[in-house]
Length: 380
Ligand code: PMP
Image 1 (spheres, rainbow, N blue to C red):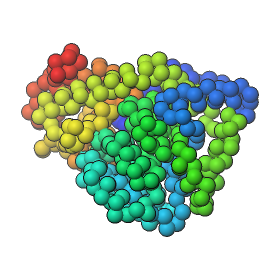
Image 2 (image 1 turned 60 degrees about the vertical axis):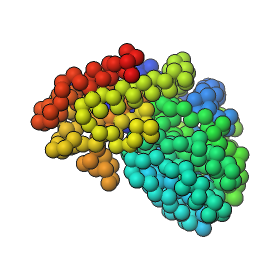
Image 3 (image 1 turned 45 degrees about the vertical axis):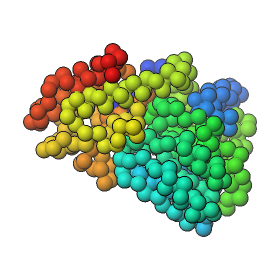
């Protein structure tokens, strides 16, 4: 059976990235690897749209989030956590682990963060030092308004930390221009690289917090990472093969062009949404907040989402994600991020139609596919 990964990470790998993974090992303290890292860094700054140093940590995305918190939060610091899904919760929990006094703003799962509520909270709590936000909330398929949050945090003087693990490289996030002080992302989603690296960049305002931070850290010390970075090195042995892979993936993104990559994802997102709506299914988020990278769909009446996912995988080789935490069993998620194109979305919708039909749902075969095709041909 041919596996078609349509989950929000790990995502499919382009052949160029797979080839790069197979390159022979080199010494990570060699001159050649330092030269390679310097070039990789320039590409990362372009894709992360920042002039700040981008530090690469060998860990998953959560390690990057932990590094963000461990290096900036002192016990008792007031931290505002914006929570509208599982990953917002994770960032909040990390702040709690490091002893922050967490002020949580919770929004319904599937809805975007409401800026007026954030504005009011910042006004009521002038001592908030750090705001934790999620760009693309993978558990709900909602894209949050980071630009708006950037303005609010700038006005307030708080440092804005953004979990861009599942959005970066697929949707526009001009970090410096929008006032993102701490940007965290990871390799395995829109960046089309296997899991295992997190990237983090900090503005001068965020580095000032690092200087004042006394929380324990060792592997995740950003001072240590920065010191090594100054010599195009890493503090510890990096995942060398993943560096090669990431470099190949960034080459692909830059060759396509950032704007074109973002436009491709917008188009795929629109087509996926039109497709599922044409099948009579309901989206979880309101359309205007829906992520272009990930379509979260409510399970149809009378069908168990897990049965649907199992049939799709076992019979058609199409892997969709299920719901997480409170959305478990209630939604399924179709990811279209990274190395994906129009035919991938059509394939996913075609398989979905067959599986729904086999489970007894009344669907017009071809209806979802046709709706997506119309988007691709410019009809919507
Ligand atoms: N944040 C977001 C928004 C994510 O989607 C994920 C992964 N699903 C993470 C954080 C955690 O990343 P990892 O699983 O690589 O630790």
